[in-house]
Amino acid sequence: MKIRRAELKDTDQISQLFYDTVTNINIKDYDTAQISVWASGYNDIKKWSSKIQEQYFFVAEQDNKITGFGSITSEGYLDYMYVHKDHQGKGIASELLKYLVQIAFDHDLREIRAEVSITARPFFRSKGFEITKTFITRLGEVEFEDCEMTKFLCKK
Image 1 (cartoon, rainbow, N blue to C red):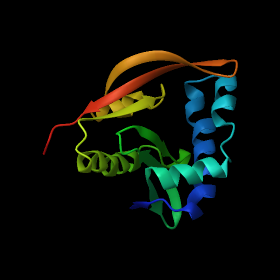
Image 2: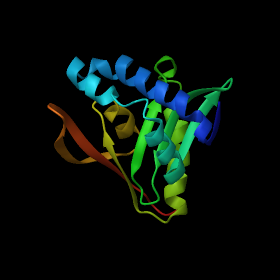
Image 3: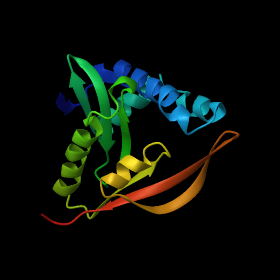
């Protein structure tokens, strides 16, 4: 597995991985209306392109195929962390998270925050994140139980 910065040419693979993961993995914790809203707009290439350009956006790659991606802002907001539906549980998210945590250290941040799905909470908990806030997110007519998780960083 290779971790590298995402490039604009990766948007098609990133958008498809996002869609496939939400519709195949997150379906175990969310109903079909929630999944439909969450996955809509997955092919908004303009959105993915701007995220790649504006954030520290990394992809995990194996045999020239993207198997996961994650991104963080310079303020410490972890925006994305997705692993391909066929590559769950292989340490890909853990490797991506190492890169994102290093970015936070490089920016002298004291914490990393993320809005975390029900599905991803166990992973983030296992990496030292704590639930700091719970709330309801509304997308159109659909509501989601949501939480903010925070990892407090210690100086090395």
